[in-house]
Length: 235
Image: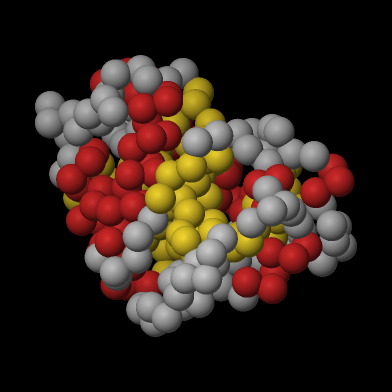
C-alpha cells in the first residue's frame, strides 16, 4: 500500500459540524473547496458531519436498488459506487485531499481510506475487514455471515478528492431497507451500537482523528465549511 502521509504538506484542516447539514449544501461546499485546493488557494481538509435522512446514488447506481423512492429525499451524486443511506447517528467524513502531493494513486487512496476505518474500529474492539471486489469495511457476525459497517465513495477532480466515508455509529438501521445498500443483496448492514459498542460521536471523532494522523499526517482544527443547521430545509 502506497504511503499517503506527506510530511512536507501543511496540516490538514480538521473540521467538525455539530448540527445536521443538508446534503446538497454539503456537496456545494465541497465543490468550492476542491476548486480552491486545485487552484492552490486553499489547503486540504477533512470535514466530519451528519446528514438528515437521505439516499444518495453514485455513478454506478441501479434504479432497481431504490426500493422505496418516496421514503427519503434521493440525491444523484458524482461519487463512485451505488446507493447508500445517510442519516443521524452516522459519522460522515468528507475528505478534500490533494493527490498531486500524495502520489496520484486513486487505488492506494481508497485502500488507505479502508485502512483508516479499520484502524478506527480497533479503538472500540471491533475487527473491520476488507473484501475483494467490495469497497468498504465489513465485520463478521458471531454466528456466521458478515455485515457492512462503513461505506466509501470517492470522486477525484483535477487530482483533488471529494466525498469520502460513512461509518455507522448508531443510525436507525431500518432506514437502509429503502435501498439495496451499495448493490449488495446477500449481506446486511450493522453499526457500532448494534455490535454492543455504545460510544459517543465525540469518542468516534477522536478515534478517527488519531487514525487519520497516522495515515495522512498532522491536522489543525478549523471552522467547518458550513456551520448553520439544516441549511436547506428540503435536504
